[in-house]
Image (tube, rainbow, N blue to C red; front, side, top):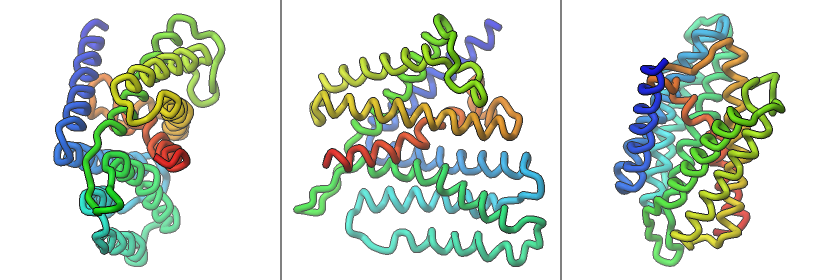
Length: 279
């Protein structure tokens, strides 16, 4: 038990340090880290589908390649705005994923298509959209600047929400939040996570006034709601397959999807929020 706690704590510290370090390290380290995470996450999703879905066999190689190319397309576009044609290689891969089922002679080609597309929409696209958060473009000059505050804030809010939910939930949790999908989550834990997250928003607003206090609070509330839904959606997927963790790549923490489940819905929601407030 003690060794498991030490392993989990060590992995968590290294994970947070690597994420924060690469985000703050500049555009290249940010892109390299999340490009790798995108590849691993799409691979993990396809591996789970192929293992637990009867008669389903996604084209894992093309799906992973597609996820990587989609991420790079967004990354390069955000670094070099107004450059066209970056999505062409990705469209070719999508065509390849579709046409390959004509020659695969598999039992459920439509199911294979569905899960392959889901690997791109559910996994690869949110990671790719992180690039939209990380770069700001000067409309007048067409110049793009790497701006790490927004993606860093996103992850800090997710971690604060998770930490608060776990701490308060273990101590005071009595009323189940969504027992059918995640029996351990409680309303008390969710409230604790929200409080931790809003405190983190107040701290960030003090040091980074790019957004007003009210807008940072709105940012945090968006992460709280959609991050919780993202967590529950991944829990629903695992419950459907009868598994505890999506993988074992992070000792004591499970797989890549376990660590990034909250952001899969939080990223597109935050982008919509920032668009709505015209940031």
